[in-house]
Image (cartoon, rainbow, N blue to C red; front, side):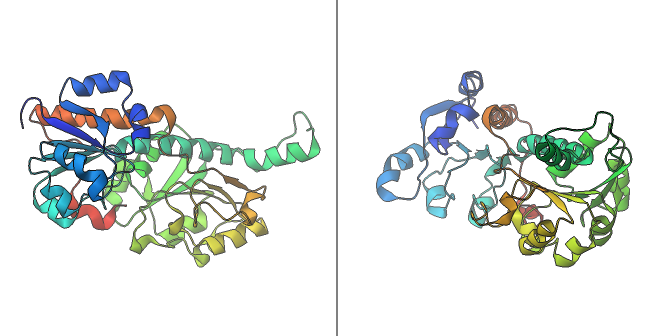
Length: 338
């Protein structure tokens, strides 16, 4: 690859200034000849004609949300393409098999996007352990409280937290939980006991994790194998008063069964993702005092998007220096990632 490769953005233009604010863009343009525009439609003949001309000289494609799949005809229009640097997470549907066979290097900012999700998760685990959601509702209803009253069922000392999935996010959550007095369980079929020990957690079967944890946080990828992995029986096995935190995908949980448990008041939940997403306006979960719903905000938003753009820039720096990409995606891992 030449010292100053030709680069092109393929993403929705509204994300560009957030992903690449001036200081990040300056760092990028110091490395490559970057077309100032963005391409969001590479397939439609009319809209894509100008893009196809740009693709002919493109060596680095910087993709993001809104980028269409890089179909074979798109790849044919980019004969010089050497690397796709994705500012989002999953690249599973970005390239067809032929793209991987051509040896195009692909990098993802999934690790950078894992950071705010893990921070959100940590915050919710700590708040849940302190009984904040329940006590907030009580305070709102009673409009007062007894100063010095002891709440014997709250607290984070020795609380058992069960993590479902040692993904990038799950591993970051493990790191963030270390300074606290939690017992951390993990279920992940790709992690053996020795690796779990190195992570500082105890590997257990999913059934055991669900049945014995005070707080369960979901971090597994959404694949056909993980759909409804937390099913009606698993939810029924959870302790009375347990809290379920989901920042992964709604499809991992049987939502009809979850809704029934939540309506009964037996379990509580923090749900940043649901199935469907968003929930219909008639869903009872909007009104339940034991449910905190947030609008899919755990991942990168606002000023956190800068980190995703910076990840792509740093990957290009490594590429031009002749180093391996830090966040290169291996097509062979697709069966186990989102």
